Image (cartoon, rainbow, N blue to C red; front, side, top):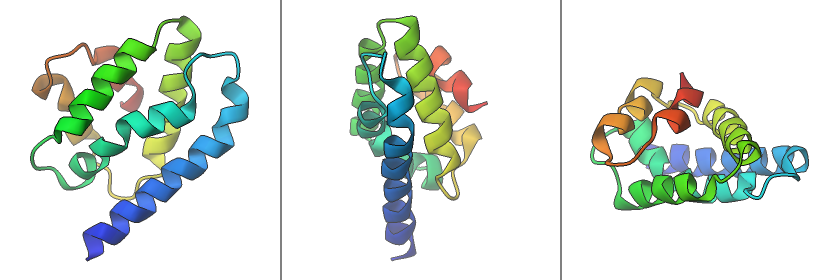
Amino acid sequence: MARFEVYGFAFMMLLVSMLVTTPYVSNATITCGEVTTLLTPCIPFGVFGGVVPPDCCAGIKGLNAAKKTTEDRRTACTCIQEGAARIPGIDYDRINMLVLLLPTKLIHLLIALR
């Protein structure tokens, strides 16, 4: 039950951060809302560990495909940093392990969390 409450709270904080940062990224083709939607499935792994959900892998691959410009990369980086900072109990070392666990180019994505 406590896990559900943490997960629900973390999701709500990501949505709030999306709304707060969206005006600052209007020149990018990717939005904080899209970043949040793509990476939300990764929250349980980042907080509780265990097996990386398939939706997390798909979201990271989708984010990598969506980042076409420098502005997109900056937007994604900012959204990831601000969103992750609002998730109670997130383990940054665990999130950075995704580089080793997923067969995709994540280095530039996860450097934002170091």
